[in-house]
Image 1 (cartoon, rainbow, N blue to C red):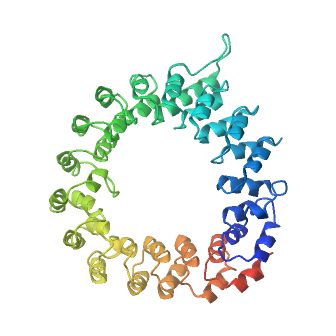
Image 2: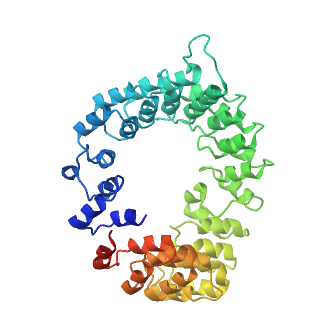
Image 3: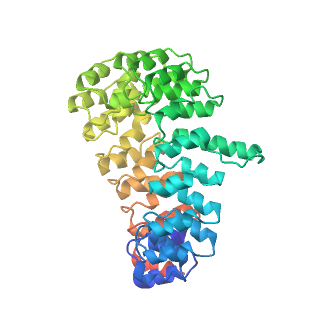
Length: 449
């Protein structure tokens, strides 16, 4: 892991690159991805993984792709099949590869509609399964996978593994946004609830299909219909009274749920702290109404908007409910005085969120790092904050865990401390310190094998 972190440094010199490249077969590929090795530095016969890494980055040569397409090692051909922008003749060769794993990998990644359609008709079921999830497959080919995708020869055995492959192929095709809605809608009453859930997640179905899915016996299917941007307000109003909380929560996450429905859901349904799409799209008038609601949870949802008018943002920062204050604490634009007032009012409950505020100055971060009682999450936020000073970072190192690892990687950490951390008993701390841009190059050179 230390070698990997060193390979990703931007300040490597030619001698250091050469020393790292000589360590093993994998490191040249890492150096190629990091930009330290280019076409002129790589011989595909010597460093095949590095050449494939450059092809994957779009920086390799077409003749390399042709070379690997004919390579006897199927693992290299399979890796090639996932590379973007391959020449048409190379894709043709990979599509006809005798190893189905190679063709399946191409089926996952090709952006050519003609190649994708060809692979959707491949005689191997695993290749067809891979193609079913590729959005480059034309709608007609996806419809064929849904209505008659299995070209088994008459009399061929169909064991449990094959049935599982068939089911998974259907699931992938139904989940593919490019699948034609009429072919997907035909599965609204399929016996498999997993397939019905995939149907309920499709964004382009007719309204009557969503209405039928809203009455499905499985809560997970109803929840998918409730959350689907294609379902209308009638579905939202119907499912807002669903007995299952996961369904009501899904209604709240619909991007166009009527605002009055959302307000009714807030007191009875735990919605979580993440921003809701409907709140993100709310008008200024709706936000003002929500911020004045008697329900703290609705005020909290409004407080998650990071583009609130300053006066509304500041009003929510002074909210007496800690959940509302936590939601608004990371917002840009809050003054250090308001952030300090939040900590004074709510204490440890808001420490981590205040520490995550991008405008928190170094002095405030140092105060938060010394706060008693301390909060591990606050130390983790401080340890990766760009405004953190050495004074703020040292308590994070003492805090242990992830905060210690993050602090070891922070460029504001004094060089002498970084050097000491290279001998830390925790491997993750050593790796973080090795990747710290403030580590003196001379020390790094001494550490190279």
